[in-house]
Image 1: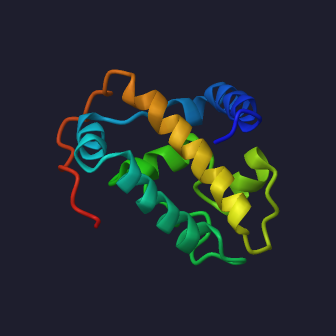
Image 2: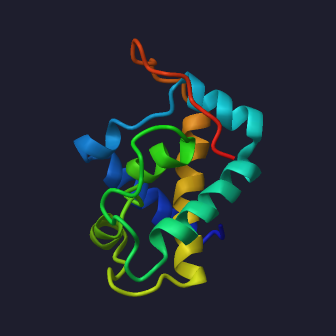
Length: 139
């Protein structure tokens, strides 16, 4: 992420934090552990694959329902950063809905996800809900 993009990302994250829905997403202990175990580079590789396959197509399969609410740190980050579906990308990021996302647009989404994850690393893990199943392996 270059210096010119950083203020834009900070502004976007600040706007997202004002949304009661977006602000409630945080990594729990399991997600933080998964991130620590795998490392940011691997998690961002996963993020790139999720964005490429689930968001970048012109008409993603099950758009609006393609991103689970849990199961991987990137899924949580996608909801927190409004990069979970094409409607949210249009509303919060200004990306058109019915076009193929190009490499630069995908990179911009990944930069926001990375920035959010980096903030979460520096925060205490949120409480795990009672009875939540442990996070399974995705890759």
